[in-house]
Image (cartoon, rainbow, N blue to C red):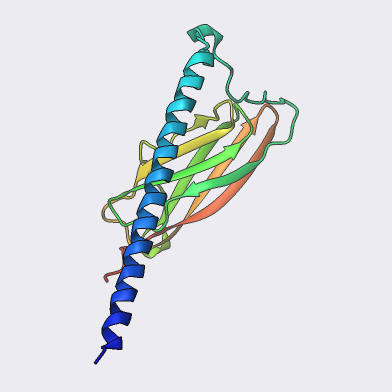
Length: 177
């Protein structure tokens, strides 16, 4: 008696083997073609490649800062503010204003009994904006400072014109997870 189930099973395995061999041959040919193409392109690029040497004083110029207009309107825009900040940690405030504008900053803390006190931290000093109009202040929040929101005031002057900006920094401990 003939076992047709075995013949079919042997035929399936034969087809699988033939497909595997065919796939392997195609992959080997593709990899070989890729290697040959890469080698050929490397030879071509080495023959035509030129390198330009730029001397240090001949480097292309970067962005050109704008010149301050002494009669122009002064503006202030907040760029970054670290908030909330835990007591005893550093805070920073970055603004953009007119190039070369002179700016003052004050951070006022409310004291017990609703008395207000300006921070005297050494990082809160008058600064002049760089050629791009950017100023950054960094200071330390006093370690005994109570949790709360405190005003930050910035005044910038450029010749006879000035601008005022106010924001709030939040002093708070990070939330426990």
